[in-house]
Structures are given as structure tokens and as C-alpha cells.
Length: 143
Image (cartoon, rainbow, N blue to C red; front, side, top):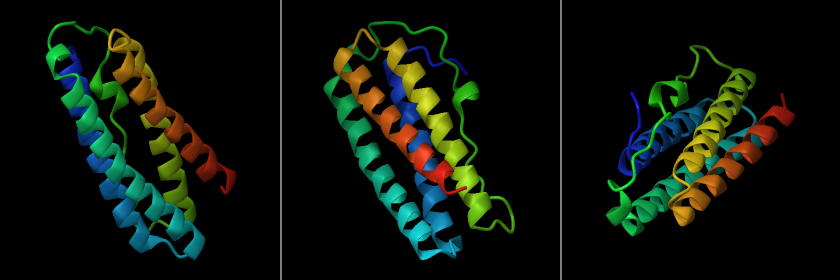
């Protein structure tokens, strides 16, 4: 589905952040390595903060939500896989989490470029993308 307005972009971002938080919450219970469990827990809490950030960005830019059309941003391309593979061990969860963080990074960078007419909102999405990139690198470093 095409995300053609700022409001649609933020709604999609909120939806995927909720899915990602749910993924991390479930993954915490699977983790065998305590350090990995702590990382998953921090990523879960980060997700809760990100939802609040997105709500703030939407609230602060509500008047611009429908003014400027967006083209070339499709939610199907950016939808992350948040299912934990059955019988997954720490390595499989780590790989899934790294792929998830990479997918989020790509979405936020693409979305930020599409909403550059809202510079503060675009910057907020770039910061989210940077955090995803750092998390992906941390997760991959231990694979």
C-alpha cells in the first residue's frame, strides 16, 4: 500500500514499532544468554520510547499531515518480518532482530527523504534510522 501522506507514514511507523516491541518482548523470554536478554530488553524499552517520539512528531506536525502529497513510499516494501522462528535459539533470534533493525533503518531513511518538506519530522526519522543501524551492527557483531 502506498503511503501518500505524512499521517500515513507516521501511522505505518507506529504500527511497525508496536510489532517490533512485541517481537522483542517475546524474544526476551527465549534468550538463553543473559547479556543477550539484556540487549533484547533494552531494545524493547527503546521501542516504547520510539512510539512516544512518533506520537510527539505527529502531534507537532498535525497541520501538515495532509498538505503535501508523498509518492514512492510503499508499506509492503518496508514491512518487517517480526515472527520468531519456531524453536529459535539465540543465534536465530539475533539474526531475525538484525534483519528487523536493518529493515527499519531502510524504512526510516526512505521516509525521511520523502518528508523532507517537514524538516524537524524528517530529522526525527533520521535519528530513529541511525538508532536502528547501530542496533543492527551490534546484533550482527555477535553473530
